[in-house]
Image 1 (cartoon, rainbow, N blue to C red):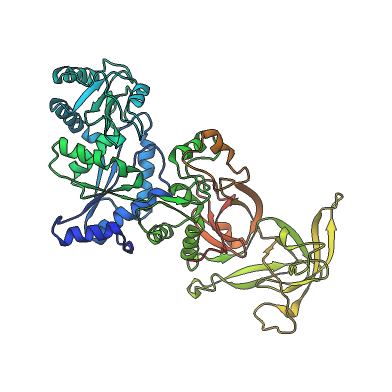
Image 2: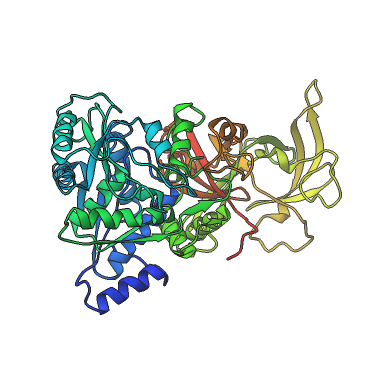
Amino acid sequence: MSEHTPNASNFIKTIVSEDLKSGKYDEIITRFPPEPNGYLHIGHAKSIVLNFGLADEFGGKTNLRFDDTNPLKEDQEYVDSIKEDVEWLGYEWDNLFFASNYFDIMHDKAVLLIKKGLAYVDDLSADEIREYRGTLTEPGKESPYRNRTVEENLELFKQMKEGKFANGEKVLRAKIDMSSPNINLRDPVIYRVAHSTHHNTGDKWCIYPMYAFAHPLEDAIEGVTHSICTLEFEDQRPLYDWVVEKCEMEHTPHQYEFGRLNLTDTVMSKRKLKQLVDEHIVDGWDDPRMPTISGLRRRGYTPESIRTFCREIGVSKSSGVVDVQMLEHFVREDLKLKAPRTMGIVKPLKVVITNYPEGQVEMLEAENNPENEEMGTRQIPFSREIYIEQDDFMENPPKKYFRLFPGNEVRLKHAYFIKCEEVIKDENGNVIEIHCTYDPETKSGTGFTGRKVKGTLHWVEASQAVPAEFRIFNPLLKSDEESEEASEKTFLEQINPNSLEIHQGYVEPNMKDAKAGDKFQFFRHGYFNVDPKLSKEDHLVFNLIVSLKSSFKL
């Protein structure tokens, strides 16, 4: 079991505590039950932290279970990625289960329902079943096949299992109440024909249980005490309880619902995330713009920051929208003392210091992290030619512009004061180089107090600068209007065409040995991570994790 900071008090935690105190359970068992039909995203992280966190805090167990009941959408790739994500977040499951391992039991329970007159084989099509189901204000009507005999249903279900029917030709439905005010109880489909190879069971089965039938059976088989899921399953709880009772399960689990996580400017639909991948709008599930756990990991988020975020947003019975800046706040807080400070130039502009001796290179001392003295210092070169940011120079600046412009003096971080003397342009009038002079009396660290300047610029010495690629990420959506109901066309129209900016710049020479996953704070830019997928020994690629400042406050 892993040891992490406990979840804050919430209604589920209170229920668990009371159940243990009353002796209802000697030990709690939770589960994290993803369907392996895509990669996990930040919303799943909330469920992971809640389920594993509760078990850790109360000395219980958590199962990782794959709800793999739909072979048409599931794949071993997703199974592997989910296991990797859970482990990366810092959790260890006590047992690893697959719903498909229970297919024999589920089949037998379906037969039991048929024998009890509580399930029947239906010939209606999916559209007809939907039409017969009725609406929220009108009751459904019974299928003409609802009153088949037990013997007929047993034989038809046997033929379904033997592969004698095509996909969609027949289904097995629970016989409950077609006039129930809860549409989920209007004879829901519990088995369907699907001639498809399963990632775990191969071609053993051509019929598969529906999630609403399989899930409560899985919880009961595993002895789960607190089956925690999101609010959209609240209306299915009566069906969950019906399945456990009518299938005569020895253990009776209970389902509890909490509000799902929604983030501003963030796509949280697995179906739509898959669409982004399939249509090559992003370069994979781990694209740093994606809210997937693998995408956040590649971007540079830390597991500690994600766990803290999930605990801090809390657990409630209502779904709300959390500002994505809150997630960014926690990664800043986590990296503040961990990430070494350095200088990188994203959009370079060459500066020639005309009165600095040609051929001379001096080494300057710089702190690696002023907020963490244990990280020590480093040596950085300084010479006649350096790079600064293009945005740090303006030929005709507005008022209160304190960076470099003709006649103005600024401080170079860790170095000297320089003054802009001349602007060099190309034949099209574009600034390609600026010439400055420096004051050798103003060296940083010497205690110079002769005069003050208002602007401080970061820079990189030109002759030893290491070329680097910087990837700056903006929201994938142009606005925060994405919703689960949005059509595929509408959704794609919301994609921000400028969600990725790529710049070729330079970093300090001591960065040449940076490894995949190393994290740094670039002065005035933000926190960056060495991309583990694109970065090579001779081609450093840095992903912007998060900018330095935010207006967000807890």
